[in-house]
Amino acid sequence: MELSPDVAFVAGLMGEPARAAILVALVGGRARPAGELAFIGNVAPQTASFHLRKLMEAALITVERHGRHSYYRLANERVATTLESLAALAPVRQPSEPRTRAESEHIKELRMARSCYKHLAGKLAVEIHRACTDRGLLASDCSLTVAGERWCRELGLPPSARLSGKACLDWTERRNHIGGPLGAALFSRFLELHWIERSRQSRAVRITHTGTRAFEQNLGITISGFL
Image 1: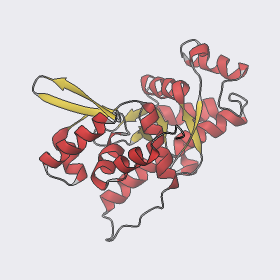
Image 2: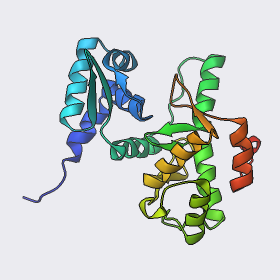
Image 3: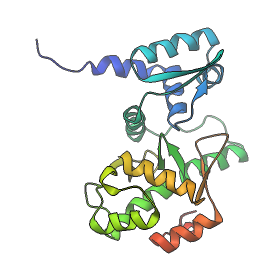
């Protein structure tokens, strides 16, 4: 018998509609309570508890307990990257009913910029990857060049030796953005500099007025050009 990973087992866990919805909801990196995940998965609380237990047993999610309350999040970035990769392969499903204006705006916001676990995704993230590559800050394998290390220091990031990057295929744009420790460090620094702001309601990330100027000055990215 040949030793091989049980891909079917993990794929089966992720492929169940309620569990898939729960996992996708956790890709943003924020911990969520079971009741909220039950609503997202469109299942009863008892059914959600069953699904959450299965996902925990497979080490796809973890739980944080605060008193009587439990909050769930993805186990690690590898799970988030796997889900984003699957999303990039999946066909885009058209809605059965016309979207409201609010729904359309929300989808537009998610495509523009969103959190993907600990790094940035969406059009902005893809443009950052392109700009860094064009300017010689990133090598083809998404590692920092000497110029990239200098740029990171100027940006105020920690020593570059710890900032290995990884190319992640963006599921809405079908092009790469920066993941790995470098992607996480950039996302955190952009938040600290107030170039971007998290949404409290979703994975969407808003580009601030400061960020609009800063991205153009630092990377030549004109935000209005891809709105």
